Image (cartoon, rainbow, N blue to C red):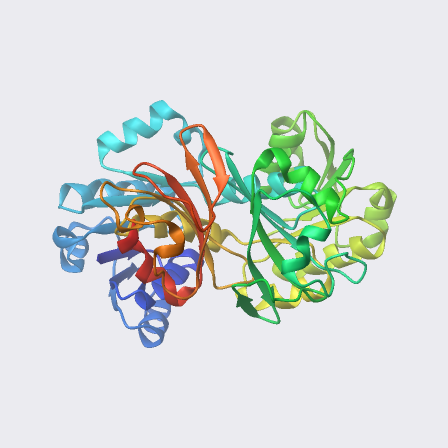
Length: 445
């Protein structure tokens, strides 16, 4: 595909890196010459200096032959306007990064489509949804829903006291009578493994399990993971993620939000009427303890500073908080932070890239999730008419190495895939794929 990316910040650069590896032709537009030089020297792409709302710059970038135009600058107005212009000049699909919740209503989305903006992406809103999902399912480190919640994938960490430690997967049945689940993958020592029955789970493994939502809690209980009773949540940082998370939860739980800036704190009091906003430096452990850190069920750090988020989460863990969640944008920190004991890591780049990446696939993709701490991805395909995957039972189809079919949604029913499963047109199929297999899987659907 011919893809133009306007903006080479964190999200734009990550997308460029990923899409170049997939073999797409990429042009990056930015007004920062130094960053453009760095991007062009690092990746096999074309960089173009100028404004993404300039007609001449867009034409020079080749917008008339553009399959996908992605605007992810720091300016919402520029992103929207650039997409409108790009569509008028011939871009087939357009995506704009926004920071306004109002735009995401169904009526407003339709208005943007009519203007020429096909997809709106709000990274902080996506990240806040992920935080809320993990808070509500406290026994997991990550959780994802597919087909409107008909299938669920969750991630658990094997600790020293887990009944999963040293367990061979073919013996998993000794722990539970439940059968409607699939262990899709394991992350161990920076490597992702597609397991088989002989695979043995080890301490500090991250295990990815696809199951039906109605049995998830029973499945967790069978492996010694109970759901925490939630009452008190601490959030460090009055960022957009912190605000959205508080809005999602403040009517259900006791929320304390720490913000160091006095003026911002005053504004947050009006925005979050049911959240206790505390104007205090949450990096100071005494301030956290004074506000009841030791009684917190979950501590979430979303200040926008990776080091602050990591260190405060580790402090919270030391004082007995059962679950800590950190926003970490530097990809190099993610594995280290996980090893240090941070339960869940939120990364806006991965969340945003997942949604945009789905638009580059040849088959119809309802969802892609780039997973934190692993190079693998989870994809939800909608099966097309006469697709290869419908021709035989799964056991008789030769899939590429690095692929495991997890679950299927057919109408209102969902089930875990087995060898004798026959996939049909219109099914939603959730699968786990290693990087080397992702380009090879679209042709089956």
